Image (cartoon, rainbow, N blue to C red):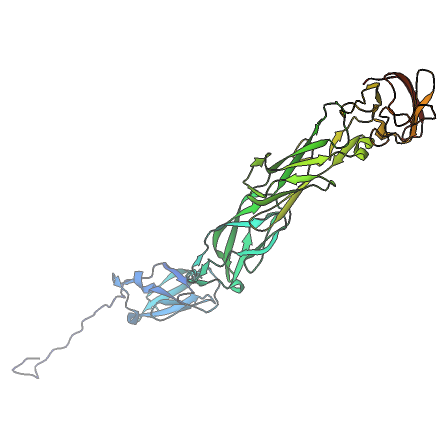
Length: 446
């Protein structure tokens, strides 16, 4: 229309074509969702979709889920929400976006993938400190119950261990027992020596949370040994044992254990033996063979038996008060054989000359060994066959021929028999009552 003449007008048409925007939906990897930390993805499916070359604004499109997943919810803002209780795994859904101005004609589809994991936060481990124990000395002979509690110097969360909150385990041992409260037993007759025992303290509610330590134990096994030897003292130089002569005993004592010993003493049950020596101490492997001795006076009964046999004993004590002892052996520390000393005193030998001249030297008719055979008879005849002496139970002492007549003769008994040759007859029975007879010449010299 003309501006100055508005009624002067002309009419025509103009055509305008409106084209849809360029819309593109792209496949998505929505990442990983940890259900222990959250239930939704941290990225939107729109982040890589475009409209006319620019990132899609959710208000400019219409979002539709084409292939749903029962575990996933696609929200209008493009965030994928994970339903509670969703198992771990990889999931996907197909969605479509349409231009809001052209919702039926301008659309695009894509697939969104998302991984679901469940990594609960790791609870910080409580602190367990197990400290080594030892060295602890124990009695291996008698054993010991609860000789130590290995938990006494261990800590859980900086506090003393509560046995109810931990599990105690140890390397198996045939000699040691670990109790659940931390105490330890050692069995009787455990071999002596040093032992290293490993144990472990674990949190009962988290068995993988553990700490280990070592218990060092020295097992004491005190032990002692004694060797007893005997020497015959031939005081009269005869080469044969006579009543009243002596035997000297020597003792060698050795500490055969692994701890020192105190109060070492000898006892000898042989009646009449006299033991000398004071109590001594012995270190490990130490021996003594000079402190203890014993003297025994031989009796006629010993000579009759042909030997003296007896066994001594030794006793000592360890620092823990364990008493140990041993019976003597005559050769080595490990044996227990009695000490036997043979006595050669019963062999008959007639000394066929004597001189009853008052000097008390060789003043009687001596028959060595006859004391062993008290069932005897001695007869003495002069050169004319006259019996001048006759006695039973001859004993070389108070019943002995000293040169005086005791027979039925004309010789006065108060007068000694004259120097000369005489004849003796000896009859005796041995221990088996077997008769024996000896005879020969006897010379009296003054």
